[in-house]
Length: 74
Length: 354
Image (cartoon, each protein chain N blue to C red):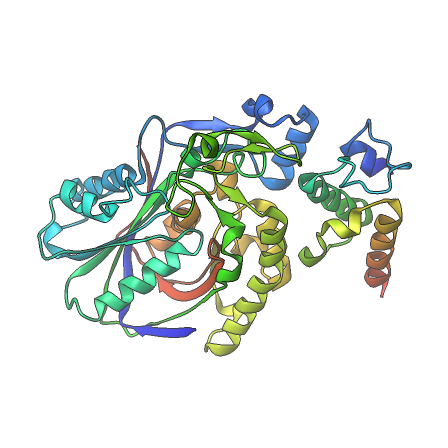
């Protein structure tokens, strides 16, 4: 959540069902988000996974990060 | 399609950039971004400075400036030229070809062949391919390959997807036959079904210019441009560079007698820093072998980015020794291509300003 708020401090990410459609994040924000996630969790995100469908809301974002953390540990 | 050429070489590369420099952080009002977002993008995408032409300067003016420079320095003899090729998406006119205009202004002989090739990001490879094929018939004459674009003039200053990265530049490359039998390998692919992913929709004959096509409109994503401005499908193009491009490069290396590890430098088209860094990760190429710094200094100048990346990053090395270089271009068309070539020592490898 801190990462999201660092990109858009005034956005309500908790209530939003779709960050992209509701205009909270654009494609540049997704790239910034990817970079911040990589730095925060010390993981490397495959360029093929830089797609808006993984960053729609908190649920998809959590699933995305969890998947990478599991891969990273294994 | 895989192609192989023998006894061909590049003997010199000169890049020409406009003296006029613009800074991303001075364009806060163009895009409707906050200052924090501008700083994020500067860091992640490499948006910083870029060179763009002023007034009505055209690609042909940049190219001619380069040719005159080489001629005055004694690095180019007009009598040695068998053909000139200009790769550009920003011609002076629809008619005549801009290569003809350059031919006239540079004072070349009537026997010199002239070609315009309308290509973008893969244009350096297309141009070299054309040069190599011509050289089969030109004996001891040389081919002058020129790549250049002034796309800042066809991009809306309020287009946040494109304007922060677009730069103008040209390059002059001398290509000639060689007694050395180093081989050049090249593969180029096209998918025209996605040709509208990078496009200027109006102003040609499919959608002629009208008052309506010239109107700058606000779009649902908050962006602004007219139908006569450059438009890019950003997400689609990004995914393409992360899927099909690395796959094609890997397949290419499986078809040639050179491994990725044997390559000294990877001089790729320079769309933006993030895209290139992800591509390098995908291919397992160390960052120091694959420069991604051209957008932040000069901008993305389409087919001129590969020669510009060479002139900026490895010019000193190339004037002293031979390097095994892998070039790759990807974008407009859609087209994507890879080339392996031994490069150097070069007679010249510089950047000049106009």
